Amino acid sequence: MKEIIRVARWRVGKKIGSRSMMEKVAPHYYQYAKERIACDCSKCKCPAQSACSYSFVYIDERSKLMYFDVPKAASTTIRKAFFKNKAMASLRNPRKELDQYYKFTFVRNPWDRMVSNWKMFTTQPSRMKQLEVMTNADLSDFESFVSFAIDCPNHHWQPQALFTPEPLDFVGKLESFDEDMNRLLSHLGRTPLALGKQNSTRRKGYRDYYSPTLVEVVADYYRRDIESFGYEF
View 1: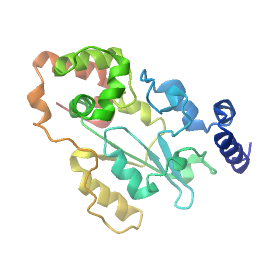
View 2: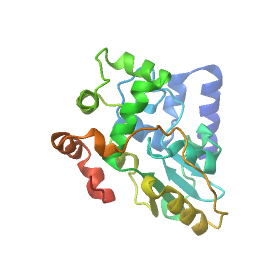
View 3: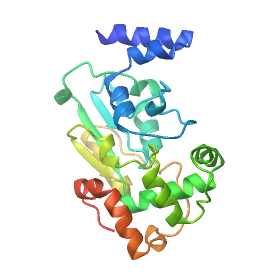
View 4: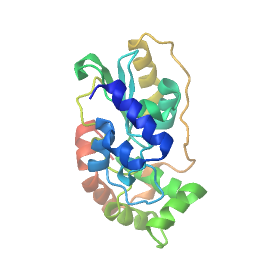
């Protein structure tokens, strides 16, 4: 099916409120996320919940740019910078072969990312409501949250490698965000920016939340991320 026809049918389905119609013509990376990136939160609008709202791959046809969106790795900032945070950019199929696009992502230290998720879901009202539909357990203790997260998937804390199913041209890291982002912008011929990360939480350094045992528990869960992206505790 030609992309222009698929998009037209998607928009008709959205206009008439037919989720089944939208699912039939959903783009490739939406289908990928629905099948591979699990999320047990019924209030979530991610592909796992068949919400037809967004996927995790944003495409700019004019610039031949593809962003593989990893939650909790400056994703809001990046979407605003490159795609004006428009979800429709993630509901497209590439119109050319993948090797004609510049594919990039940003990742984050897995131990730090787990702490960030815990803080977000136990302190931000909207996220607390999402957590409440997944469990009635008290997760104010970090170790309790880790045990829960490993057993109950949510796209926010799923392993980062799941969000990067294609070979990438550029992998930036949250730990060197400004430097890596401006290096990316320079490569793309764009003006360097002082972006600053959105949705960040104030807290102690992530290492302060870990016992030796918990370090290994999270390492086992995120083993592929640690190996793929070269992280250490």
